[in-house]
Image (cartoon, rainbow over all chains, first blue to last red; front, side, top):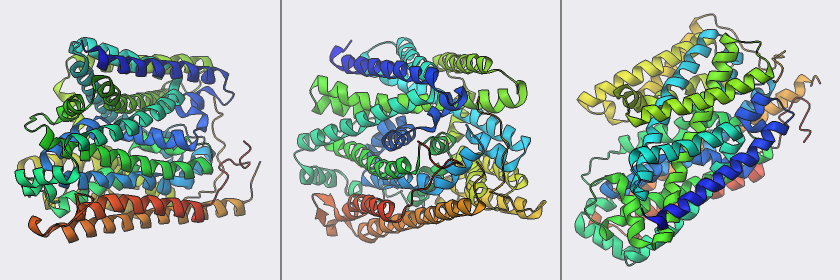
Amino acid sequence: MNWSVITPLIVMIVIIFIIGYWSSRKVVSSDKGFLQEYFLGGRELGGFVLAMTMVATYGSASSFLGGPGTAYTVGFGWILLAMAQVVTGYFVLMVLGKKFAILARKYNSITLVDFLKTRYNSPVVVILSALSIIIFLFSAMAAQWIGGARLVESLTGMSYNTALFVFAISVVVYVIVGGFRAVAVTDAVQGGVMVIGTLILLIAVIIAGGGIPNIMADLVAENPNFVTPFGEDGSLTKAYVSSFWILVGVGVVGLPQIAVRAMSYKNSTSMHRALIIGTIVTGIIMLNMHLIGVFARPILPGIEIGDKVIPLISMEVLPAWLAGIVLAAPMAAIMSTVDSLLILVSSTVVKDVYLNYVKPDASVQNIKRVSFAVTAILGIIVYFLAFNPPELLIFLNLFAFGGLEAAFIWPMILGLYWKYSNKYGAILSMIVGIVSYISIHFYNQVNGELFGVHTVTVPIVLSFVAFIAGSLLIKREAFDYEMKIEGELSR
Amino acid sequence: MKPLNKTQDWRFKVAHREAWIGVGLALFNFIWWYGFAYGLGSKPVEEYTYVFGLPAWFFYSCVLGFIVISILTIVIVKFWFVDVPFDEEGDQR
């Protein structure tokens, strides 16, 4: 066991437990109703925490291990692609923005599905969206757990099963105890760890490589394509790289775990601050992490497995104790993604399924018990699935990101801004989005990328057409955004 | 409790304008990113120039581009974004 690396990780987990405990006292003492407090943090997030929780939720294992690993193999072309993510920092909050915040409060929506339910007034929309959130995000969550456990395993030398246990316990306990507020506050701490960790590592890598011009010369000497935008073998086309602006850029608006954060902030001042902080933090993290990946190449050539680039380069260029602190960053990224997904899936089960269809008249006491129990049970199921991940899970995870974007982006955006949006458009759009995403995924596997762009592109266009067609052709009717909602009492 | 419809119109108008600003900024961001990356990066590698040691296309597209977008975001938010109350009764807290 490598204690100099384990100690910083343990310190981080302890800090997270303390935050979870502190946040739990807020849940008990809040006067705003349990559901709103537990699943939305009482809509009280300030600018800094809001920005950090969005960045941290979004920046998952892929930004910290997979992304830099690919940059190591592909070169600067991959950093170019990754920088498309800076747009998420401002775009999500500007576009969902104030309209979503105002309507979500007016409708008393706790979840994204709640909002869609009031906007479209259709059980089919509720069931379709709740199902896709539960199925896709559950698999995404399991995949992240596996990644988290593998990381703990490789850093500490624990066995996979022990690592999984440590990882699972630390996430589940603070999510159950602290709810959304604990998740958001720990995300803020973890976001801070990511920014500082990546900065330290980038500087250390540049020094170890003998300065940037030196590293460039080494890269050009090995393969000049590394410093072009077209990838190591020239295969990154303009169209392909640009299509990532949809997948990891503007399309992120449609991800439920991101959208739900756009209804959790306190006031427009926090939203404005979050816009600025989110953009800067996303940019710094993405730029640093991927530059580290490329710069690591001349220092440590010949790494075969991309995910290992960051752990190996940290151990190489930093003293052990500092490497431990820096490596807490990818750990933080995975934990913060997992906790957000867990609370979101749990809120979907409790609020959108249980309270809508199983027991609409549940008492506050009952809701509390069910919320804690559902979160715990979900945690335990994921834990057992991650022991020996079934094929189906890995399969579903492939669609989690792009599939959810294709399903939700238009019902969200057009539902907010276009008064003729109706339930027929929304239902058609979701079905067309998911079905075409899965079909094109298989088509691309056999034939290469359709039109040379990422899988997500065509389904986003098709679901848009389906939405407009459905809304205009079937029972066209203007929606009244000023409509009064009698609303359910906040519980 | 019941706000005038006029008040809500006002808030929605602000929201719509800011959403369009978001779309505009993203478009500008994309054009900047694309223009510098492929405008300067399509040359043969031997003709590349370097800024702070980084390939010029990358520096202008990703590093300077990121700085420009951050500054634009700050300016836009400070000068064009309007504070609005979210609650029906106005923001009490």
